[in-house]
Length: 123
Image 1: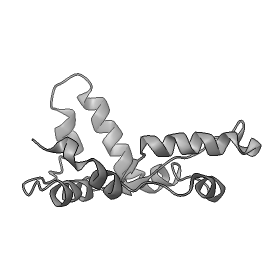
Image 2 (image 1 turned 135 degrees about the vertical axis):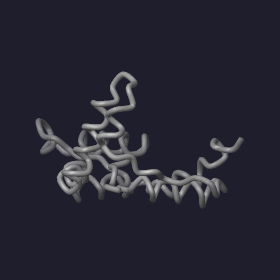
Image 3 (image 1 turned 90 degrees about the vertical axis):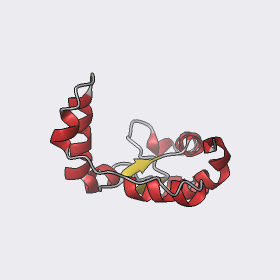
Image 4 (image 1 turned 90 degrees about the horizontal axis):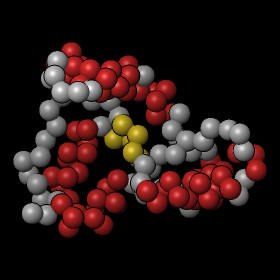
């Protein structure tokens, strides 16, 4: 139930533009994140905006996920373990600095994106 860093395509473009406008960013690492939500939050937003009442999140323990047997299962399980054990560091490393956020004009939250794109998820 740890948060994932989400970034919209438009926010990536705005962040790149903000970096080009600020020479102080040359040679530095910059974060880019539109939103930080748990998988449960994401499932709830799909249920709400896409009218999918049966969408829910099922937490799978890391060890169980690693045992699924498909190529990369163990590696994905370790990635999820990192997200859980180092959530604060993971999220904070993806946050854009205030100067960039001002130049970007803010970020697009997942709920806003989903409301605009909900028709793409209809059957």
